[in-house]
Image 1 (cartoon, rainbow, N blue to C red):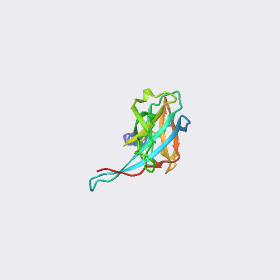
Image 2 (cartoon, rainbow, N blue to C red):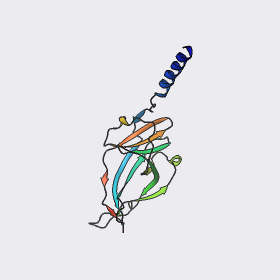
Image 3 (tube, helix red, strand yellow):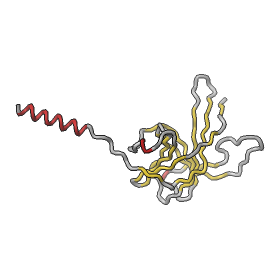
Length: 172
């Protein structure tokens, strides 16, 4: 009987320890990112049966004196890792009546997260779906798009209010 009660007690304790929920990190809105331009463009493949893809680009000015440790883009359903480039405005102007090819207005310079300084103009390109950081997704309303970044131990976000749609790009 004593053995039975001991086993029952151990099993009940082990069930409680397994049922703990994940701890989510606190997130707050920040003014460290000033968004200049947000663009979405569908890429239509040249081969039949291949689905079209969508690419996004966010150009913004980094306003914080602290460099980010991580950068993600949250689309309302997926977390995506991103590549980051420092960009410089070019003097390219499209001929009258034509739409400039996407990406010709800025010259890119690949940099790492540790090279970001206050006042840099940056381009963020979401690349692939990743596992979500330990951030409660209910903090973000569906349908809104966010750039989420980490400085030291704090997670911060900036809301992207509107994304301009560029003309579809048809590959040969």
